[in-house]
Structure formats: C-alpha cells, structure tokens
Image 1 (tube, rainbow, N blue to C red):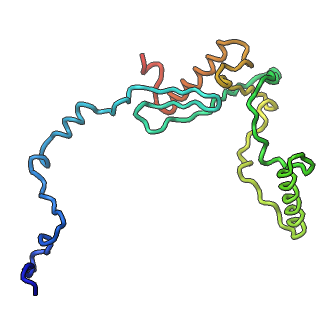
Image 2 (tube, rainbow, N blue to C red):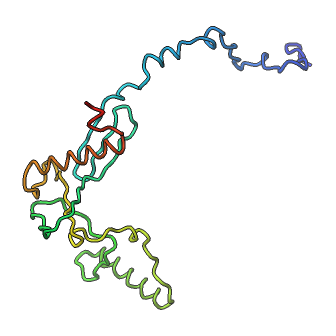
Image 3 (cartoon, one colour):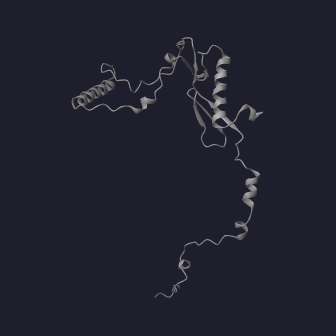
Length: 198
C-alpha cells in the first residue's frame, strides 16, 4: 500500500483525496431568505409584457407581446359573403409564383429538366396502371376550400407588397379590413377588447 493515501473508512467516500471539487454546503442565509420573492413581487410581469408588436405583411400578420418568444401568425385574408358577382382582381405587376405542384407537367416543355421529369412521371403512371396499383390519395385535399368566388365570397388581402391593395374601392375599406384582422386577433388570442383598453 502506498504511504500517501490512507485507507478510507466505511463512512467516507474517498472523494476528498482526489482533485474533484466538492462544493461547499449552501449558506443558510440564502436558502431561507426572501430575496427572490421580493424581486418577483416588484416585477410580476416580464419586461415588455405591456407592449404589443404588430407586424403587418402581405401573406400574414404577426402579432405578439414584446416579451413573447414567437408571435401569433394570422393569414392576411378577409372573406366576405356577397350577393353581387365578385369582380376579377385588376391585373398589375405581381410577384411570379411557382407552378402548382399537383398539376401534371407537360412533356412538350422547352425546359429539358421538366420534360425529363414528365417522362419519368408518365413511365411511373403507366407502370402503376399495368400492376393495378392505385395512386396514393392526397389527404391534404380533403381540407381544401371550395372556390370562394363561386360560393359567393369576396376574398381580399388588404396589403399587397409594400402598398395597400388597389383592388379595394377606397382607402377606408382597406383600413377597415386591417382593423378587423388586428381586432379579432387581439380578442381571440390575447383576450384584449376595446372595453379592456379604455
């Protein structure tokens, strides 16, 4: 047995003979104090809890408290039931959108990549029909909404790009839709109404 390390007794762990740092027992002053409860009493709500941040966008509105980690995201769309036929939106410079992923690709396209994808898809469809394998149903289509203009609804987005939408008859109608989106979100998500703010 080496001389430098004594035998540990049964009630000792032998940890005091290593370089492991054993923390000291907690000071009773801090374990029985009320410092943290006083601090909590002084500020019941985190900083920024009384501040609302509203970020209006073309596709979505983001509304939340400044202390929240992530805001509530609401689609920036207003649908209203109308009895008159819904006019088509005015054509203007719009952002190009990608093609519908559910639409089959035509094999007679000028793009060689798209024509190769169309050839592969046609081969796969013919092979599946040869083996009598039904195509996989798209479960996401179950929740697709019907065409709103055909149902008698006028669907509008109050903001287009960095400007207000020009499809509205007046500026007051645009501001009324923005006010409606913000008011309904504050009422449903944050339980804030006009009566509570007065």
